[in-house]
Image 1 (cartoon, one colour):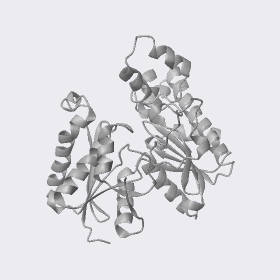
Image 2: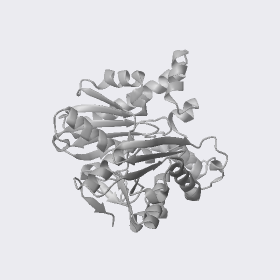
Image 3: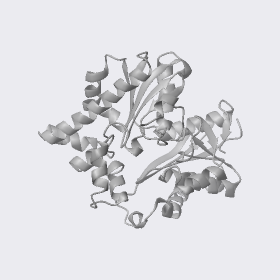
Image 4: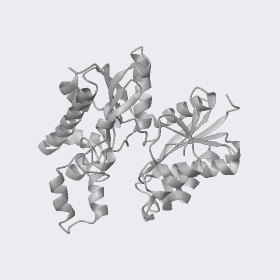
Length: 359
């Protein structure tokens, strides 16, 4: 390994900044800073306007832990929405940053995170890395086509956690990841249901664009005719409609909360609508698992549930009721993105994985 010592890891979400400092594998400090109630945060009209705000938070965190930026030897950021990539560890370079800024492939705060990492690393003369970006593309041709000419399904999902859980699941089963067939379901604000076939995600829904099951803040697949009526009704702007697909759709639009614990509280209090909507989400997840089983020709070694909602016994038991006949179900609750970023970065710096160049 290179003389690695102090590692800064950043993971920028829509309303949070997650930061961690490691000395090799020892965690020195880790914090999630929430921005929902921050008045300054809500003055930004675009995520790229947040650059200085987010960077100061990151720099202040390093200082608060008794270090200077000059003490850092490596910076790692969650990956940005850029063009299709292979799985693995990448150096954050100028081409990646410019593609993130272009918004051509999507627009997400993790693009700002990659840019901050790249800029600080450049100023210090050190390396900036990212691991298993959301735009990893291993889809088979059959998974790409739609019924519209020149409109294709895109591979965009929670790849960082999906791939990490895939490797953990394979180890638990006594297999190599490249030998395993599994269905992995990431359940957070959005959902991704992925068919992992011998080391590659050959089919997965794109929850950002409204594909797949309903989620706490995403609408999931909608009847296209109703969407067209809404689009041409004159009642909504494009940003308003898009927010109803991603950000303010799904459970949030129907029940007014994105918090699964609040929904389950409503159900406990006898709220019939909350129960029907939540059970419908579970049903849609189960149907997607069934579809993924078909893509694997029924040869499924295991099903894994991960993400924040995998802590919910209500959801886990509901999915099990529908799907346990397909394969044994394993739980890997939480997102564990910081740990996955660290592991991938160390694998790259150790030479266990190649450090790839984005072009």
